[in-house]
Amino acid sequence: MASVVSYNRPTRPAFSAPAIVAVLCAIGSFFAGAGLGLLLAILAIVAGLIGIVMALSPSVRGGIVSTISVLAGVVGILAAVVKIFVH
Image (tube, rainbow, N blue to C red; front, side, top):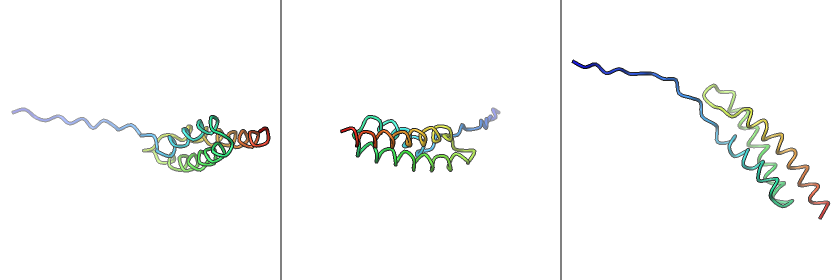
């Protein structure tokens, strides 16, 4: 009689949705105009902070990506402010 062998491979933690949203918003903030860029930068910071908190769980990845997105969001805010005063 054949027996069924079951392998319990550990599953790899998945990236959190806020981490992905934070990256996309941070990148988009550099290519958008001043108003939309400011909004996207703020969303990148908020989503990045949520991603950092979620990454404290061992089943979720994206802590470093979220941290970089928060920093990019801050730079995006500075870039949006410069765009406002340059134009």
